[in-house]
Image 1 (cartoon, rainbow, N blue to C red):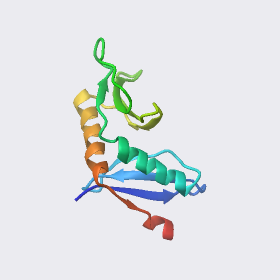
Image 2: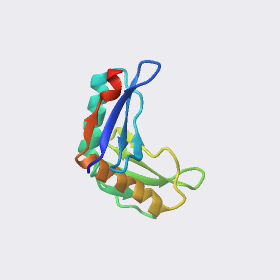
Image 3: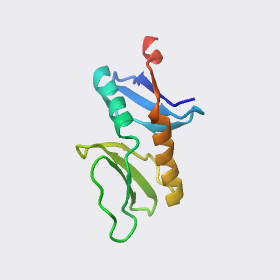
Length: 128
């Protein structure tokens, strides 16, 4: 079973999506979008870029990759984080929390890549 993008509307009238893995665990939550159309575009952007290569910025002299790509980096607290950058270098996803290990961070990226690959889009929450 593939993952799914679930689009919802916030109490303030914005749209956002979450990406759920096959086990229904949320692996990514989007920013707020002003319109449903731009939220749907955000879903398509994640789908298009989810299989991007990983640039490891935690090593000395990292190999700089072309966009799109994931960047793995250390935050100010020494935690591992990632961001997904689209082909136009726009930041389209980032880890909400830091990871204690690089392996954990890479597992988070892998979860997004697997879940987004053939994910369906669920807008049923908008109908209520």
